[in-house]
Image (cartoon, rainbow, N blue to C red):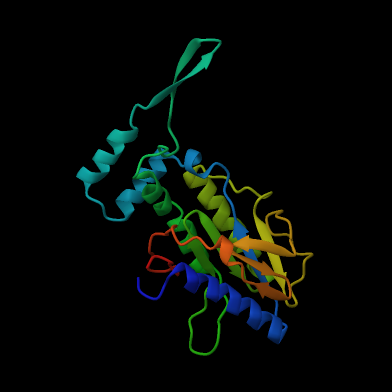
Amino acid sequence: MSDNTILDAVATVRDTIAQAETNDIPLCVITHDFQHKFDSISHEYLFSILRSYGLSARLVALMKNLYTDDTSAVQINGDLHGPISIRCGVRQVCPLSMTLYTLCPQPFLNMLEQRLPGARIGRGNRPISVMANADDVTILLTSRTDIPAIEDAIRLFENASGAHLNTRKSQALPIGRWNTSANITDMPYHPHLKEIGRAFLEHYTQIDHRHVDTTHRQSPSPNTRSILP
């Protein structure tokens, strides 16, 4: 998609923070991190996602052949123990793995986009509530009344996919008049956080070009702001 690069996503968060600070309105920038992302995705969930994208039955069957009847073994003191059936995760080093994984969070992103009002920058622009860069998800929360929608979306995604939110690595950045007494899935509030390659600080933003990484990509979605050029 044109005009939707990683720098556009960075600029969107930067401008939203600046607007919230200038107008003293509540805003919370949330970064979600899921535990063992590539190891936890259910194969059944993965195949259902591929079908939902309209891939042909033949192509889905070929993908299934890569993961069906996969086993592993554990070596202890030179002896192999197993086999252990593998029913989740995408293969490491496989060139398909990143593409397959980036398709999996899309229903989660779509739920957030549909349920959250988002933040609007300027006049005439549509509100933005969620952005994704590879496996990093950033949410722009404007009201504490929308926290249950986030919690429900996380619960549904975890139950369906096998993924689990890592609350210790997930962070929330309060801006403007945001009340930090609001509990957001038990994740901690931080005065700063690293988000899609930039450091956003409470009360102002600080650009750090050393951390910009333009190699990651996120699959496009009709309902979610994509950073795929």
